[in-house]
Length: 277
Image (cartoon, rainbow, N blue to C red; front, side):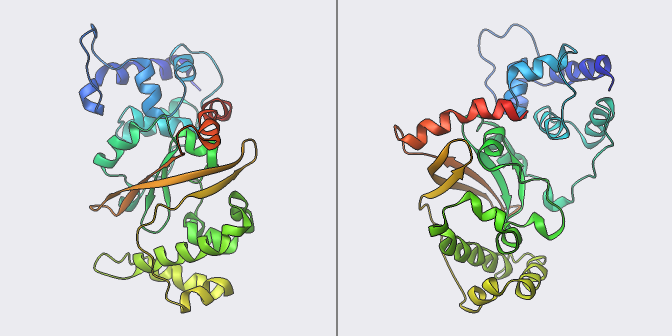
């Protein structure tokens, strides 16, 4: 890891960005060009102190997940992102396929969701991006490969995934996931990968096959769901989705009833998220 080069590279890219480039207001008191460190930190889903230590050549080597967040926050090109990883001493990660690229409009909204758990999902249930509060709430869901990238596959093949929800909600969640997969596999905007996912699930999960034969169909729903967190206990949350029709991607934001116990628990997620960096 080349700390000096890494710090200098981040400074140059931070100073080259203007607030307007990332959807932030300039403000009247801004005297210098470029973004502030706290702005880059928020866009990258890391704490200001953590990001500042990287630019100051202090602290541990940033993880690959942190570097991915910084590359996104600084709007680095693919070549610049590869350079960032090399400076930090990592092999450059494989570049995503076009289907994994998040649309610029929904990305701007995602960047403003630093204060609440948020993630961007594909129509096939792949988690494309998570902010640090989403990771603290549900774990990192972006590192899966193969069929395991899809929530439906993990739900019906990996019992550990269901530990995030109370057992009483498993049946409803299974039907919802199957219905969402059916929607992705049919209609004018059907994803050609959906057929392969359905075929695999039919062959490996009797539970999925039984639900699939019932042709589950469900419209948009904002019913509360419960998350079983290892440190915070049970949280009752509402998931609100913003659809980007151009890329069939959804920004999912989790909120709690204001003033509720779950709302208090969400507020404590930030401290937990800092411990995961």
